[in-house]
Length: 107
Image 1 (cartoon, one colour):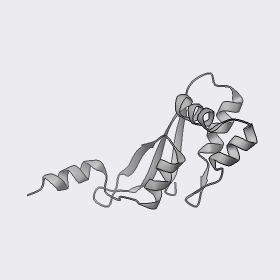
Image 2 (cartoon, one colour):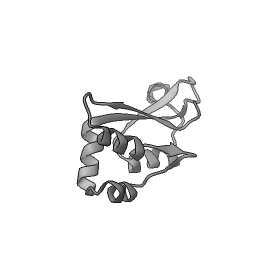
Image 3 (cartoon, helix red, strand yellow):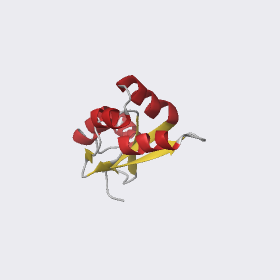
Image 4 (spheres, helix red, strand yellow):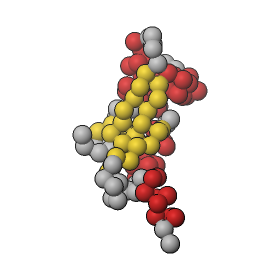
């Protein structure tokens, strides 16, 4: 799969509209989110706190940023908001935490 991409795990027994909101919230193409929180709030008639609650309380999302330049394993970062994901995408760190720890310990 082409980097960056997101994988979302949903809680069980969710309402179809909640799943739709979460899917649209995390939909990304060419490093850009297709639905801003403002668009989603307007589309579904919900407040920002309600949108945040729906996303954070009903799912877990991981950002697959790229491959580590040291070990070539995927760099996976848990994210809870578009702004956190955008920050990681726009300011990537291409060394995974395991390799960074090893490099920091090296004499």
